[in-house]
Length: 409
Image (cartoon, rainbow, N blue to C red; front, side):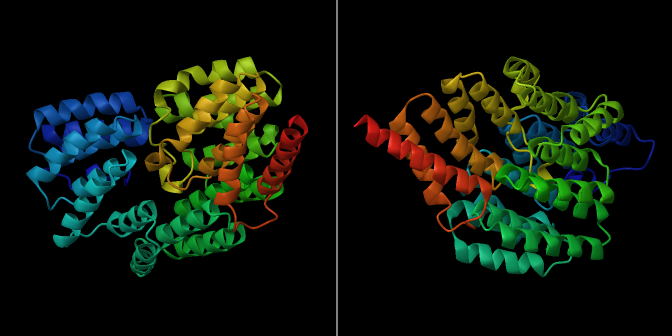
């Protein structure tokens, strides 16, 4: 889902009304970040120029970032029908299908695009992602080889491999792979991408309990870039790893620099404020902070390219419910994450939610469901690096749960 896919082919010259409509949509989507305004402008643009695939594709991006995937599919189907050789159309249609877990539709869309010999970096990444969802290891390896052989996609593919490794619990290999991705990004003069990869690594380590490494990576990412999504990733990693002073400094900067940005106002800031409230034992305040984020819970995050940020509002809300002893509601939030693999992909939140679900059931006194959830987590990470902190915690908690069950019997 390339951020600027709808603007890769400008239809007419500067000053033409169609260009002005495009410029307004672009400005809202890429500059102010006001997604609601981008949707309004995009819908007007698409109605005025219904045969312009650029208009339909631009509108689809706003829909995706607002979590309106069915609408995204509808407009992209029209775009592909109008001009099947406009590469962003089938590319973003395939991503939309993946977000909806319509894997067969995504596969056929990708196949048709490749048959037409369309060229776009995403068409190297998409087969890998689809193979991951199908559990096709050989397909993943073939796609990875092709992606890493292309200079436009090599760093992105390598970072995606790093997240798959981390998702499987191979954190040491993941970090080595992230370093290669960052080197490739720098060689391609893509400093911002290198920063995003580092921020993603920080978030990974924070979720998995490696606090000192998370803080190190967060600060390293900020030395490369202070862009919106890098700052958010660093702020999240710092907060989860206990550095609330550093995190809140970034929060203030985001609030000041992006006053209209939908992702900042309704996702990034509420999550950070909720994490701060939880650090102060204010679970009610955390829950209240996240109310404004609820309509965007299932939206593709603006930090999507970095492979982090997916469904973090439900995760932090689940933590707040746990702190408030509202265990059934906490379990519902963590289950929401597990129920949407097409959106979450290999985001570390998907791993952490498995463990948190077990804790919610255990603290609620439902030993049967707690045992099943812990077993699911431990089976999933059977081959993981043994020293990962949350894995050690899970094993300890499961052992205590087993002992308590024996005591009850």
